[in-house]
Image (tube, rainbow, N blue to C red; front, side, top):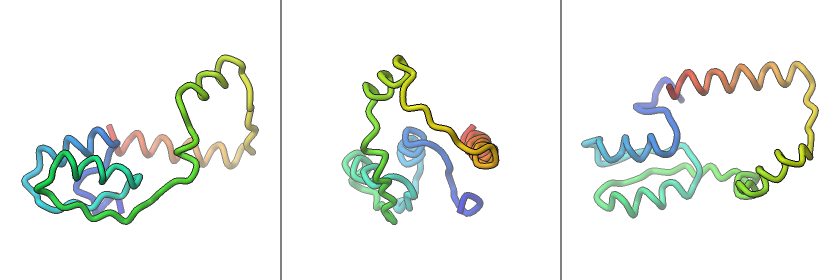
Length: 98
């Protein structure tokens, strides 16, 4: 999918790409609400959205994350092979978006 994309990046980068692009149609492979925001910002452009709603993303709030960090609570232990694969995935994500 990444190799076929014209742009790979975060939500603010996607908005910038849409703003600067002369294209009239965009396929967004991201969280569902992103297309709603872009439709309002760019009414003359069409957004094709295979909605990918993550049920856990809406449960994360900055206040809760800060509280967990301050209290050093909710520690999660992950087996080393899983951690190593996750680290590689994160590193690849950073490579693709930088």
